[in-house]
Amino acid sequence: MAAGEGCGGHAFAASSGHDGQVTTSQGNPIGYDLEGVYRLVGIEPPSLQRAEVEALAGVDSERSARWWRAMGFPEVTPGEIAFGTEDVDIVRRLDSMIAADAVSDDDVARLARLMGASFSRLVEAQLAVIPALLAAVPAAHADRLGALDRIEGDVGSDAIGFVESTMNYVWRRHLLAALAHSLSMGEDNGIRTVGFADLSGFSRISKSASAEEITEIVEIFETAAFDVVSAHAGRVVKLIGDEVMFVADSFDDAIEISLDLISRLRPIEALPPLHCGIATGSTVLVGGDVFGQTVNLASRLTDQARPDSVAVTRRDGQHLLDRDDLDVRAPHRSVDLKGVGRMHILAIRPLDTDHDV
Image 1 (tube, helix red, strand yellow):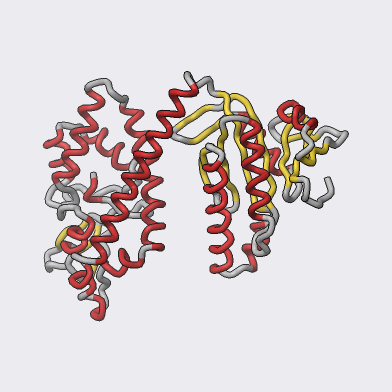
Image 2: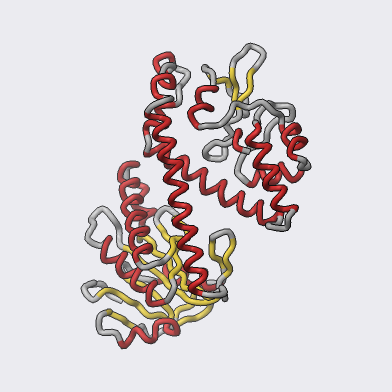
């Protein structure tokens, strides 16, 4: 249902009031005609009500509403002109895939939720880093009313075209990598190595840091996380501000990821120390995310790790005690990990790290 797309879960479906003024689906008056905005993003202006979309696509109201909400869009008032033929086409295609038993209704909703959340965040980031997109959207102020006419066929369209083609390229490359990895690894048995890397004391720092300083810390951290994890053929599962969760093909790969990330970030004075936790075991993959007790264990180990070190269980890391290129220390006592139980933990650090266990 493309005509209602927006960022941050806010639909950008527009209709004309009795006075000719354009309003959004939230009912807020906008001081200019939105047709130029629709042209800019390549979506036809709305011409259909939701009931008309459902009738033309041959889909019942409950199913279409479920998909719409799953994509992260707000409810549309009955009778509101908020959709177009693109919405009819996508609803019809989804229904045909389900009818052909290619996917289930639950699969469609799950994928819609994932795409809705991902693209909402992506659009927010794009609007922040590509000023041309913001500049291309006219505001209600008179001094910006001509912005769309000036930019629509030039900078704004070029920026949107660039983003669209880049997204398609990145998606296809990731699809290729995922398929190749899946074929090389064989049937997924659910066993994965999960790692967390967390900036120590970030919450405390963020209370006194400026917005610019917080942005700098997060961007440096996220850039390094993606660079290092990708370099070792791992995958970033998600970023949560000051923490990254990743998966790796092996326990030793995850160790290298963590230690390389520590070595890369440690010289940067603006960043607090990093502490990491790694665990290998049974997991459940849902919508690209990873769940299970192994994830909980890796998270708890991260909480136990000292600054600039990696915490692992003795069971997983016993073989590391024989490596002479690592500083591996085994505290004599076991630790009670919440929700996991008592574990003997190894502390692993680069040889040049100078911290107490």
